[in-house]
Amino acid sequence: MQAAIAVENVSHKFDERVALDGITLQVMPGEMYGLLGPNGGGKTTLFRMLCTMLPPDHGTIRLLGKNAAANAVRAHIGVVFQHPSLDVRLTVLENLRHQGHLYGLKGRPLSQRIEEVLDMMALADRAKDRIEILSGGLQRRVELCKSLLHRPQILIFDEPCTGLDPGARRGFWDDLDILRRTYGTTLVLTTHFIEEAERCDRIGILDRGQLIAEGTPAALKRTVGCEVITLETRDPKGLQLQIEKVAGRDVQIIDGQVRIACDEGQQLLAQLYPLLRENVQAMTLSVPTLEDVFVQRTGHGFHVEDQ
Amino acid sequence: MRMAFWLPVVSLWRRELVRFARDRNRLFGAIGQPLVFWLLLGAGFEKSFAPLGISSGYLEYIYPGILLLILLFTAIFSTISVIEDRREGFMQSVLVAPVSRTGLVLGKVLGGGTLAFLESLVFLVFLAFLDIPISIASLGMTLIFLAILGIGLTALGFAIAWQASSTAGFHAVMTLFLFPLWVLSGAFFPAEGASRWLAYLMAINPLTYGMDGLRQSLYLTTSDANTHLWFCVIISVAFAALTLSAAVWQVCRKEK
Image: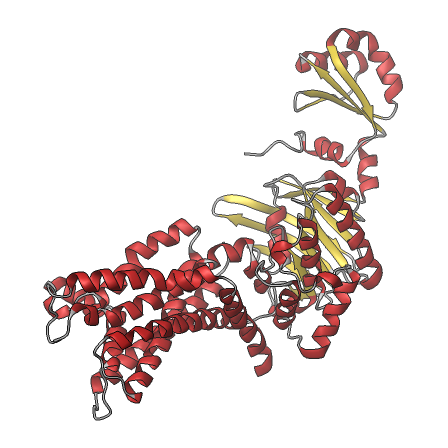
């Protein structure tokens, strides 16, 4: 099967700053692929390349077998930007009509498509409202309608849930489910929210321009181990040394906390208990998250701004 | 093919008009300031300023200059939104659509140009208070100049706004480049009375010929066969073609 998206050895620099460094990844048709990473990790640069706005310095990007730099590709992809791209002074209907015209749709076929997407997103009764009076969640839904009008085979999102309240976020994910069921569209999204990445079929983790891990969320978490112990202490360095001496394990310090990935957390905690009782304010035993995967691979915390 | 090119152009053009119609502040914004300028400067200099070769007062001398100023202001107002629009707004979705870059520029510039033209039409009402004899020929020629200059100035605004990184930067260009371009077009004072170096600057300013053409058109009578007027038309059309090309070139440039 031909990949819907094939990124091959892509590197890019802005002046001297390396934004992407040898990225290779593939997205299969119908898949939901998440690009997870902290701000400044290279997600936005890759996003702009995928939506044909930025040609890479090195390497190639093929969408549906065609070079992403070619104008012909644009008719087959839909893009939902992080910043709203709706004209707030126009109504929902006017925005959608305009969007249709950009893709060469007009007249009855366009009206039918508009009706179809508005029905699917349950927006039919808001068609005549101006965008400026709609809530943030509804505006997002109109954005989604807008990107769907020309029935793209690939839909690309940049930070889709930024700025949405929790209710609207849940609604957005429900919308995506409807979309996948109806059209089987290939979805790619960038995100810095761990919970969002968890919902994807497969994710790639970007840090400092490199793809540091790729796979299904479950498989990635298994690589960390079954459990993670997190310890809060006043002297992380000292504790790290002591634990390494007693248990002979690899211990990390992340954001001032001591962290141990292991398979038998309870036993290990029991073994270390005499040591911890003296030195530790709080201890947590949890199943690993994608954040732990990130921490394990990079040796630094997810929410620490780089540079 | 033809259809595919014009559909987005017309759609972008329409959007400019609809937005404008829904924003009353803009209607008065672009006319209000030039109107105040006209009344204050015109009445203020009425007697003390006697332009060479023109027997009328200053209020009449500066009138076509104010028409040009309205075109310039409307052009600036309608293109300034491009700065944010293309990074964080409406233009983003146009850029990823299968729309030719030339079409994008044409739609936006024709839209802004139409608005500039319409605003200057409103100002033509004040002709009634001036002692300028109006004929079909003079009115027709004036409208042609207003249309060409409106498009040229909007395209210029677009080309500048596209590469501006902030609205503040655009304002700087406006005060240091666009406004002087207007002052040195003969809108404010004739080249004949200016210092020599300034007169040179005015001679190489393409807007000088637009301004001159506009002024001549207002006083045009059917018996005139004026080669200079046609020279002004050619320079103005060339100016519009050049600024349009600059705008298309900006949009096609590789993103940074």
